[in-house]
Image (tube, rainbow, N blue to C red; front, side, top):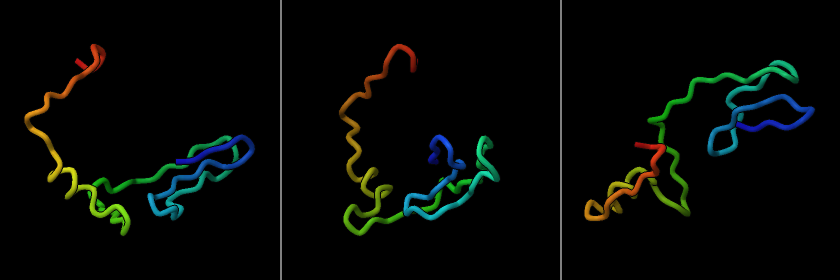
Length: 68
């Protein structure tokens, strides 16, 4: 999502395609986002597949006190 003073709010996908645009300045843009949709970047690869391959089960996840 992007917003600036004096311009309508808009929601963009990771490729920069506009998904929603607020109807006027001072209002909100609303959109349904498919969190299962894959965006594959040629220079980065498939992040979902990389995350699974790079997962380190032997390294504990440290959380802040606020996350407990």
